[in-house]
Picture 1 (cartoon, rainbow, N blue to C red):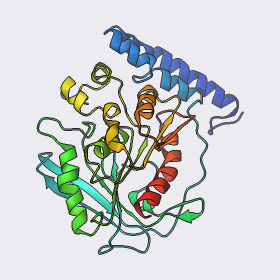
Picture 2: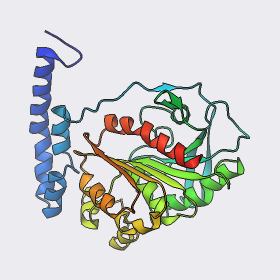
Picture 3: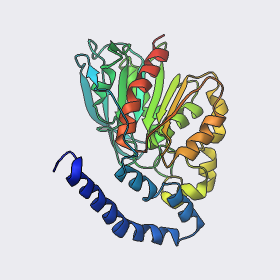
Length: 316
């Protein structure tokens, strides 16, 4: 009997047990949510709440082929913190330089926005910020650009009463980087993010098209309506009016002429929202729909082409 890699008889038994355990312990929670009303049923059926995607994962439907990552010699990173008046708290950040660069280098800047439950230390999936800007794609190094990550909380990067991560990035973090020569005109700035951060990356580009020169979003957490968003995460938006003001789908005209790349897996629970976004994006936007779920394998597979896309448009 084959063992620990999950293949063979033991693997089949383990997968069967995992599925049964999920059905026994998970479906009760789903039933409770569904009983809360139509919004709950919709979220479960779309996989936004635990249910369909967990079954997809257990059945192997979320596997995504990927090539081994390779990197040039890493450049230095700086991690520190500052008190954010926009967020009313101290936030941590990391600035990563590409190979053969460091403090004093004048470079384009990628603002990498983390996902829900993450922070500046793990905004990039499967690698560090220093590795991200040292990545070799197709055996070729990326054009030199710096990356910054920062603690944005779990409020989906849009303004909330007493906590405005958007203002923190635009009015505090980016000026801090520009004082170091990163993203200071004529050098350009891009936003990038995964899940909640992917939504934030698009939102920032829509709100500040004169500041942001390009955007790449991986599996962006795009809700199709305020009721859906509130049903899954009551803290995502402060009100229906805030959702309308910060709905990424209805403000895509601001992205006209901007390089945009969006990637989503066909089993991602947010895929309906991303499809609506794709239809609304201006002509020329790059949209990649492929196999995958809202899971780390898909995120990791999409990071190299997203970084390559940004490097191409920031350094041309």
